[in-house]
Image 1 (spheres, rainbow, N blue to C red):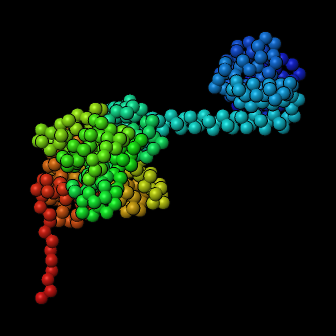
Image 2 (image 1 turned 90 degrees about the vertical axis):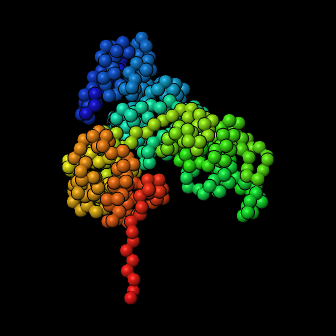
Image 3 (image 1 turned 90 degrees about the horizontal axis):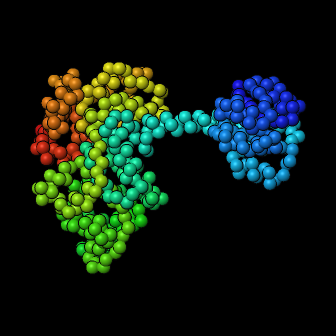
Length: 451
């Protein structure tokens, strides 16, 4: 049970209360003053019960000195004023003398139960903060701890941030973490995927248009930047933004203003811009495909997300977290990974990063009927010649593009485009774009004709 200190200068009351607490199974002892209480290491107790009026110093002196141990104040001078003053100074509760035994027992139990819950919550919060430092982000490896640190440093400012990382590394999660810790967190985070619009539509969608600005513009439309006024604007895949739209965006960053398509009227906007890309913007600047002045306006503060293959033991922690979440979502029984499964995940290069890991684990949960998920349940299609190599050797032998080419050519005879994209942790559109860039022909379809 609990360890309780009674501070009461009336010997009969002190002895009676100590015996009452002992009969309830508590380890209780009594002293007669604040000075005597301090001689007994008051911070080591679970609860201090003190009379308000004591020789020397009042019992309320113990509130700050015993903290965080709760202090219950008792007094025969039961006035509203004395109760309010004790509670203002931090007393956990207040009880009037004379009190009956049941009242004291109930009050003590309530305080100790509340204290136990608060202690458990404190431990849980510390554990969550250690394992999930920001918005569920698992970060034990040094590169991710650096990401967490940079998020915390920049979140409370108005600084423009450029988030760089491969597909599936969690760039939007970082943007949401920054926004949720900013002064603009009460407003919505307006997310825009710059690669999701046709080139002719991107300016209208971002900056809005006036009626009659172009064919089909039947009425005035506010753009997403204007809609984000007073909030945070997240521009994902900023490298896909056409040059004309880049020029307009520069005006937002330089002068905090926009012009709707088809209008000369300047509209002032107050937006904080977060941008993300998987492309090398510096190289795009050198190739004249991205404005240099816009690049420097965006790259005020850069956060680089490491690919999953460089995150070491985080892979195992992420896999466990995703497994638990997926099992709950699919109402499956509790599952664990076998050591062979962990080993295969550790060696696999994860071209689709965390997004691919989530897809792989979800598929394994749906298909697996056993308790443990074995390596074969993961269906990780590692290259046969390289899957036993340590990760650093694999990276030295194959670049990400080389791995992608080899993976697609090897498995496209067996899987359709949707399945290939899912296995890689990317969208079909992204798969098609990479095919074009890397000049990988699509598989030939077999058509059976009717004679």
